[in-house]
Length: 168
Image 1 (cartoon, helix red, strand yellow):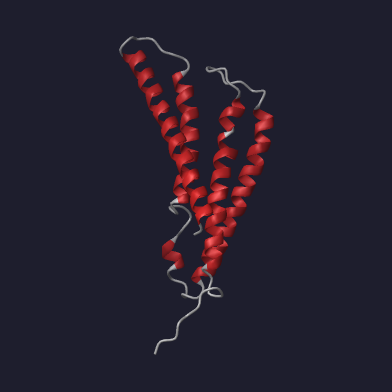
Image 2: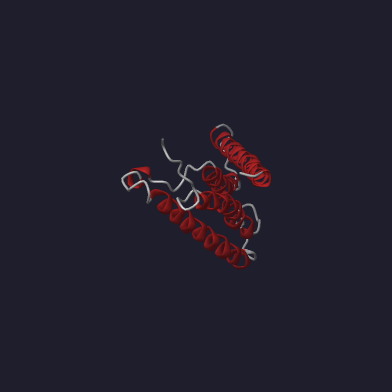
């Protein structure tokens, strides 16, 4: 892994961790506020539930990006380990290519959804729904960058690029 790739990956992780932490903290505080208002003061606020839902969406998608960068997604070791050792790197590369293609589709259609939902307003917070749906292309783009680097790594781990040393 070269220095530029490492800086990009660390920057992406920093962005994902910071934003996911912020959104999940806001979600937790808004749920706490709603519980406090409802059971202690006996009145209900209309907006904390909606805020918590939208923060959960953003936090979950950013968390998926963190899991992807840490390589905790889309590997089914039990299946891959049953295959011959020579085939395993090829399967891993193909899976990475498929995930990369899925993320391209996710970002593309996520951007299209933004134009459709931009005029729609949320019921309690009165914010544009495109801000909520913006989580899909934003987190998808960060995952796409991470997956691109993962795919390149898997490509260079193919047997055609690795040299085997002869045992004496």
